[in-house]
Structures are given as structure tokens and as C-alpha cells.
Length: 451
Ligand code: F0G
Image (tube, rainbow, N blue to C red; front, side, top):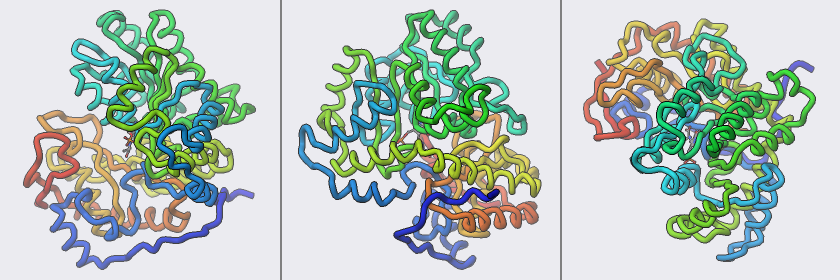
């Protein structure tokens, strides 16, 4: 059999609403052409993010009913703790309400002025939490990772020479830890090889530096390792996952991705003193150490989600369905970041709208055009998101993130048709200017005018 099918059947459905083009015109104008400012019910297919938007399984919903809502020592906490210990080998596990809460606790403890944190590519909230403490966040992804059309099996890899140089230049005493993000979201959802993780570990060991993973999409990364890395084909995903975590001294995780839940996060640590201090901060702002800002039912759903995400039929379908979207677009001449990533396809908006200069927001023009055309919501990752204060980002991208287990192949076919149709009329996409913007993080609330 050639076709890789969705390895589930559908038990509960949620209607989605088709709007008319005049309605969408009106909605766009009212929202100042910013799709963060429209109502989700006015979106037909929502590809804004893969975070917290997944569909839970029947076993996860059953877990919701089992949730033990005791303040301390809830049974549901031990179910989750056992599952994460089994998957990762980490003994010390702190529950948080989402990934950035884990980041906030970690960097409050190890960050501060004068510190420098290297990563392949920091996700926005990771960077923001590091910079909030006065420390500096530095991206060291390999050069191949920055070229959209270049095919490389592990474009998320960290550049080991750049890492050694940075350590030499700033001094080990100024580096609290080295982080690697799997998969590399800011770099196109591209994976990191096991070989690269092992090499970063060796460099860290040599310099006595802690090595941390931003492990939001650890299972998708492990699947890529199994598919693409020489010598890994015969290993199980669980075994690869375990080795990835064995290499690390700690990890921040948003369970909204590979935990397949709508809310939740984890902070994994080995160092006992760090655990003690992290527990204090956890209690201060998240909640007691056995629930960390979550309900008992959320802990149950997470435990089951982390089990289901390493099932290989699920991962095969997941990665294949993202690649399916990417391959159809490429075949129609739409340039994307190649090869397709794990959780999202990133369209090269400079290529899509060559008539719109970066200062007139080609990515946002495409995001607006795609909603106007077909009711699809995507997100700009380019000059709107990163260009505030005069920075000119190297790429103008539009991300189509795929929620887990939510859309079927015909939804994806609809998205492909809409994008190809729009590509045929791309000279009609309209440049934009900013009408109003906040002092920072403008992509969330800025308003635009079409020119
Ligand atoms: N790290 C990475 C690599 C992420 O992609 C995200 C979230 C976080 C950390 C923060 O986790 O949202 O639970 O606080 N990424 C989402 C996205 C928001 O759309 O890519 P969080």
C-alpha cells in the first residue's frame, strides 16, 4: 500500500464555518489586516500554530475524567512523572503551565547581565526570557540552515566551530548552559542529528558546561533521525528519544506540541541544587510541585499524549502529511523552505511576491491574500515579526503550521488548491504599511493599511 492514512478514526467533530468573500473583506478591514486580531470562528482552516491546537485521543479524554484534583501528591501527577521518567530517564520533573514558564524559571536561575546563551536558533519566547534577565541569546545554526532552497537532512544542526569560537571569545564563566532546539522551529522546523547532539555534548563536557534541550518537538526530531541518519533505521523511536535526553543535563518542554495537549509544560533537570531552587520559583508563580499551574486532568492528558506521540504509525503519518503539503506546493512552483520540516511548511514570500519589497511586507501580503481567498489563517515570519527597529531579516516567510490530528487529507488538498490559485494571481497581492504598532512584539497587535 502506497497511501499513508491517518492512523485514527474520528469520534467527535467540530464544525468549521465557510465565510463569503465580502464577509472576509469586512473582517480583514476591521482587524487592521492582522490575523491575530480576528475571531477563530471566522477562520475555515487554521494554520496559525501547531501549539495547543492538537486533537486529543479517546484515551486522553478518558484520562480527563480520572484526573485527581488533590492539591498535593495527586495520583495524576505520579502517572505523568512515571511516563516522563520512562521516556526520558530524567528523575527530576517539574510541571509548568507551558513552555515559556519553564524557560522563565530556568533563565531566572542561570541568566543575568553578562551571560550568553548559545542555541541553534532560539524560539521568540526563549530569547525573550533570556534577554529579560539581561543575558544575551546567540543563534549558531549551521549556514545550510539559513538557505531556503538548500537540501540538507539536518538543517537544524548547531555549527560546532561557531560554538567553540563563542566559548573561547566570551569565556566559559559567562555561559550558563548550551541549548539546542529540537526540531528547530525558528529555522523551518528542521531536525538536529544525533551525531550533532553527541558532538555538542562532547564540547559541553570538555568545557564543563551544562547542555539543555528545548525539546518541544522531540518525537518529530527522533523520527527524522530514524529516517535520515545512517545507522539509526533499525532503532525504535523510543530508544532514540531516550538517547537524545540521556545526552542532556536538562530540558524545557512545551507539552502543547509533542505532548498533544491544549495546555501544559515541563522542566527536566539533573542538578539537585538547581532542582531545589527551581522548586522554589515553581511554587512562587506556577503552583505546588505536583501540579505546577495545571489541573489534575491536564496531567493525565499529558501523560497519555507523551505516550501516543512516540507511536511510530502516528509519527509516520504526521511527518508524511506535512511533507505532502510541501511537495504539492513545490511541484506547482511555490518556493518553500526545503526540505519540508516536521510541524510546518514555510513559504518563501520574497519568491511568491517579488513585486513587494520587504519594507512593504510581502509575507503579510500573502497571509492577508490567503485569508481573503480561502479563509485560511497562516502567520508571517519576516519583517513584521522581526523588522521592528530597522532590522532586515534574511528571509520573508509565511508559516503554515499543522495542528496534530486535526485536519484530514482533503483539508490539506483544499489548502494546496487555494495557494496554487493565489500563486497564479500573485501580482494582485497588495503591499501594506503599518497604521499603528506597539513598542515591541508588534506582530500580535499592529494594524496595517493596504496600498
Ligand atoms: N520553544 C519552541 C521551540 C517553541 O516552538 C515554543 C512555542 C516554545 C518554546 C514556547 O512554548 O508556547 O508553550 O510557551 N511555539 C509556538 C509556535 C507558540 O507557534 O511555534 P509555549
